[in-house]
Image (cartoon, rainbow, N blue to C red; front, side, top):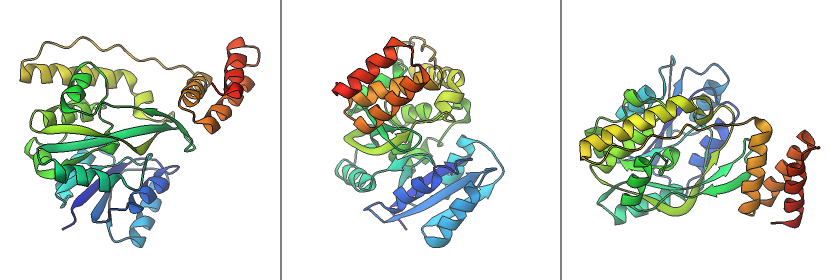
Length: 296
């Protein structure tokens, strides 16, 4: 049996899924099976994943009608044979040493049942924008989630299969925040951690759940932490503020500033030009362009 089962549900991600697959097949740690659930895609995604499976016997594709992310994750979890479960999303990129670093950590820390990594935000075309740091230790990770923030990036985690099955996997009661509920229930059973290293590039794009289902995601997150507080006897969490998003140029402005702050100059220059083109009479556009030219 392989040590790792990689679970990757996909739905209509033809633009990005080949890069995601390649990043898993390019891992330095190679003892894994790769379970891809095609959740009723209507674009070219099924053709892409089936072609990949024909080239690499470690890939197993399950194609069927659309059921949603939680049934897909639980189906893949039931199919998994590996002792460890690695999550992956069809629009992200895992760096080559991700699995090796996480397996080494879990083997050295048998009291830890789930470990994630740091992430680098990237734009739709794969340009690095900025790192988004997550806490490293168990207590800080849980406290951050209970405070209404994300502290484990779902596509970065590797967890022990038997512990996940013992808590009945993912719950469909927290749609769009099923990961938060899963992480909190795992943390009540075992230690959780994040490596300090960036080992996944996390793609930002307009079709992401965080953009298209913002209100539902915040509501589900709040319900998940309230139930966790009831289970553990913690105080009732404060309500989570709703997130708001602007238009495309607002996104590009934010990405340019983030990229400048993290010294990702190709992305900073690219988005500063786009902002200046979109808003040539806005002084803030010129201020951004000047700071990018200056380099700080």
